[in-house]
Length: 158
Image (cartoon, rainbow, N blue to C red; front, top):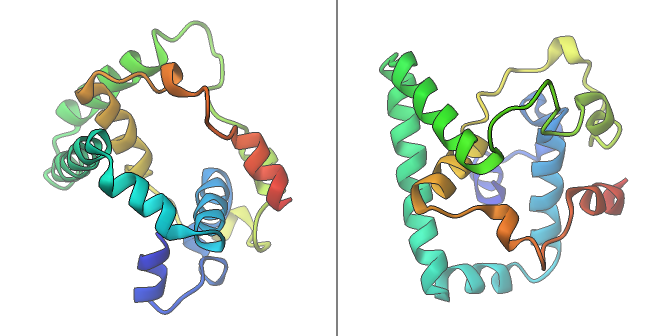
């Protein structure tokens, strides 16, 4: 994301595409990586054989899902995304929210763009992440022992 912003000569808080909800979390995590030793993160990912497999699958997942979207294959897209979601999150029981509420995440926004002016986002990056885990048979909840919880990341920038 940081390289994309640089290539576009823009900061994420200068455009309404990255405002609100989960976008705040993605921007803040990206800024956290770039404000520290980004090469350490890159080195860990690129030099780790397991990560190389995950990076390759993530790229395939993004490409496959994007193709399904642009070709208008709504049924195939929906079936694939829901199968991946069931693998990672289990069967939906009731109406239990899986993500933090947008109004909570909006409190940590980098600017104050009103909801009505925001540009919709298809969240392809997040869908591809879940698809990647599904294709690789990885459940991220089994690997969270050393991760930083999202609430800590949000509070760190709040």
